[in-house]
Length: 201
Image: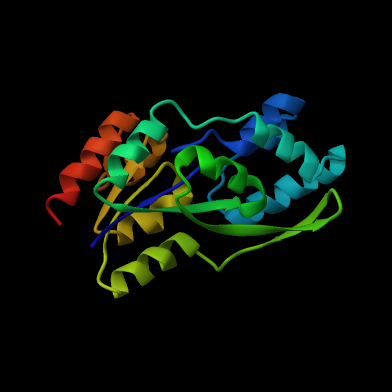
């Protein structure tokens, strides 16, 4: 059995935190894992910015309501689902991502949880450290072949541990840092590469 593991933000949907930054005009929210690969440090920064500006889960939910899958993502998912099982491995949170899963055909989603007190986001609970790597590792231990795709630093351990790892529209600095990984520039190419490698592993 062959499994496809995909990152969510930047691969299938727009970046949620960038959407909030654009909506509020808060420049400090534009930092993502592309700029800061230390996820805990990044989340501490984000929560501090939200607290400073008095923004809570309702503000984030409003941003999510306005998001749609990236152009080409839905078609690629339908195409791949005919040949592979698909799991979304993301560093986002169930409270934010679940409303978007219907538009993607309700794939399995493994991510984190926010800790809430009414509207206030008081913290977050990681599923585990380096969860994308450990998910791929667990799948391989039950004899699944894994093709993984992601766009940023926090995807690298997953991509390198998968049978095939593909970077999707990554920053040039990521390509230069990990030249051994495949690169796809759009969903048509990503789907084709997954199908190609899927026929050979």
